[in-house]
Length: 312
Ligand SMILES: N[C@H](CCC[C@H](N)C(=O)O)C(=O)O
Image (cartoon, rainbow, N blue to C red; front, side):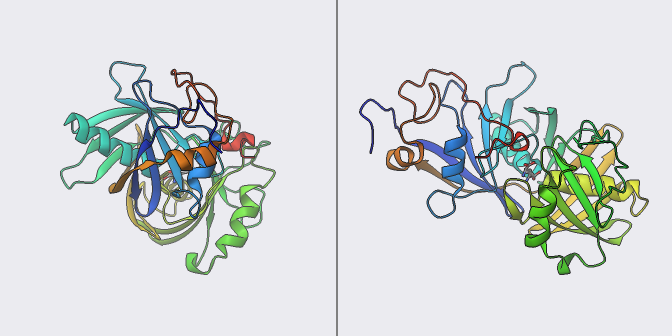
């Protein structure tokens, strides 16, 4: 039931995807109400909500040279420190809005330089890989190129943790069985995204992914970056590779300045979340300034990171 006094105006959103890794994008700039963990969970439900692999929330920049800040939510209500495919989608939207061919977004991990290439693909510098076990993070010191887990996977951070297995046949991997077990392996205190990689040639790899807080997805940009770094560190590939995902291909180039990813960003539809959906999703409890609150006044809703067990 809708409480009298609740401000449940329709909330505009966009549905986008990068290689079938799909996103709801909510523009919370200019004091618009913020996303909460409860809204992310309700909206992420593919039957009772809209459904997404991640929700990208666009916030006002806090530096004049940056276009916006962006927060990535998983459907379990947790926050992800990085999302490569959604970064390209948000970059595309804001480039179309401003007419610029390049801009800087800021995520939890820092600035992300984005540009539109002449071939129409969106390119993002995802930053340097995190190769220090404390920062990935791992629970204890370990060789990040051969973790003490069956299959001796690699660990790489891209603003979020990744555990990369090298396999002979990526198609044969039981992703839905292995993914959740590795996601919650005690070596990863904030849980982890899980990639299975088959090296096809020094310039091409095949990858399938299980995402922390989301499950099997058709593509993962940060995961493709992590896989490319892990493969190059093992000498299996060069530093430039094409990564073939279930939803299509990404180009990854591990340069001195960072891991540069290029791929498409697609807009599917624009819609509005109905007051009825919001009332059911949020019940009586949205904090001030959040979507569904009594008095949206710009206060920030707080989300616990997926990794900190924020998903209830
Ligand atoms: N799909 C995203 C990554 C989401 C990672 C998220 N599942 C996490 O908890 O870190 C990408 O394109 O990079």
